[in-house]
Amino acid sequence: MKKLLYLICFLSLFAMIGNLSDVMAQVNNNVQLPDSYKNLVPNKWGFIDKSGNMVIKPQYDFIWQGFFQGLAGVYIDKKYKMIDKNNNIVSEFKVDTVDKFSEGLAKAKANGKYGFINFQGEFIVPPMYVDAGSFSGGLASVYIDDHWGYINTKNEMVIQPQFNGAMPFTEGLAAVSKDDKWGYIKTNGAFKIKPRFNYAQSFQEGVAVVQETGYYGYINSSGDYEIQPTFHNAYKFSEGMALIVMDDLKGFINRNGKVIVQPQYTQALNYNDGMAAVKVDKKWGYIDKKGNFVIQPAFDAVDEFEENYATVKLDGSWGYIDMSGQIVIPPVFNNTFFYSEDFAAVKTPIKALK
Image (cartoon, rainbow, N blue to C red; front, side):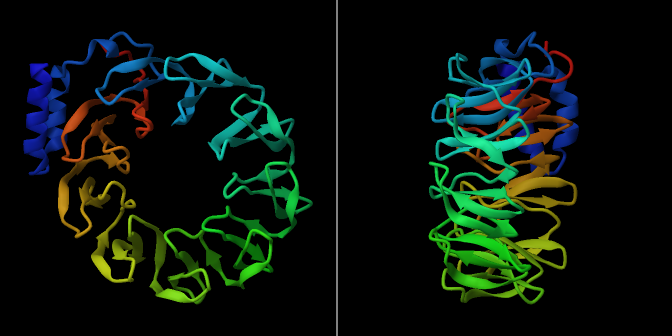
């Protein structure tokens, strides 16, 4: 335990001067791993808790959904299954592929066609579609007869197939493509915003990203621009901030369209838990909503914060930091997921940890 505390102290010090990778290379061999990490099956997925304890030992080929309503999706022995937090198998799916659950149903493929299953693996919507989206707002897009339409959970076609492209309903509207232009429909299929855009995203936080004249901006649910199209690229709002691109450099604007963080980063991720990951030279760090560094750039790769933890990569391995930048779970894994319901999926290295 003392060795782990020394490791954390060293990492905090050297992160500020940008030498964290060198430090990791020097101290990796001295990391005292929890007993639950030792002699694990290599190259398999399991789950850890927020203390880093291996609560479900690695045994799965991959994880297709983190914990959601107490259940997680796993794949083993060429079968898709769901387990609870005690690693009990709750259900087993007789499908070719399955996506994440949304509103209690998951898109699944069987015999070359797509339908939707429940948590027990029962097809609530039979596999009859060439392709499908996920349920959102009680409706899901489906592809049949060379066009997209929308069904409800009873498999009733509430919006007839007529679109070349269709996105999920969010905030009561869905982006759809017709005659090579994008517009937005209501849940009854009527156009709220007629097709006129070359590109469109789903609504989030009251606005949607569109591209009409070569530049990207944000419209409201009436189709009026709230933030004028002046950006070379733009992304959805998250926690009142949106990632924008100018001349291949990324920055952030607020909900009023004011540039809060000047475009200066080659790569960046959305805000989550009050911070956004940005890349400086070859290292990633995290900034607050004023653009100040809260966690100095020191990591080879990162993900967004979830449940106050973020997964980070150092010297080819993944671990976790807290919101102060302290490494709370040593970077020893081959791959990691973000935390969900206090559990995170982790993949053991090719060679077993000892």
